[in-house]
Length: 229
Image (cartoon, rainbow, N blue to C red; front, side, top):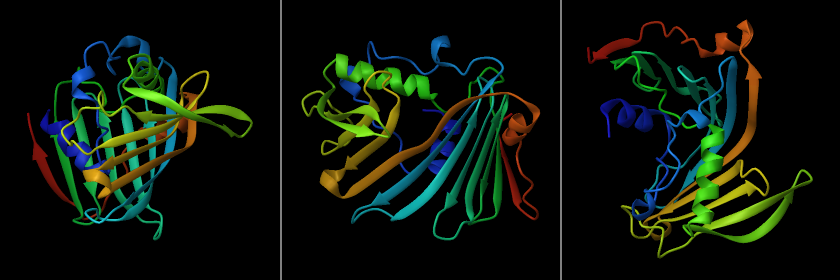
């Protein structure tokens, strides 16, 4: 795993998604052309991330992502205070990670050809469909959300083999498209619990007012660290 991916994951996300190691072969790859954001479009998604459990640092935050095939900007805001916790801006050759707690901006240099370190909604849908097809997850129920039929998925213990033997996963997906509405990761036999609820999931035209959302904000007085070429 690259320093860039590790640093961005630690800064922006509560916990990386657990991909069953035993079933990695044959699963969709996030870098496949079919799952990239189309040219001329920007993917806009918003999640509410809730973390709980006796070994966790409890939190509830809003994460907003603007994503193209080559650029991305993610902002995580603490819901209780409305304050930005981190901003991560990724563009060809460079990632900029701002940590509000330390008031530090880390600039990582990487290959210009490296894609943004975020999966598209299309990829996540394909991945969960493949999980069901390969028996890694199974359909355990159904719900109706805003008039649409949704499937409740749960991990299959004998197939869900990860670095944490006590881990479990659930998801709520659209019954036709498998677009993800919610995921839940349970680690350490319930000692760590993360729920990610999707509140916005849209693909919009890359007009000027939209692409402006991909630009890094100024952080006056921030200490700057540079890593890489």
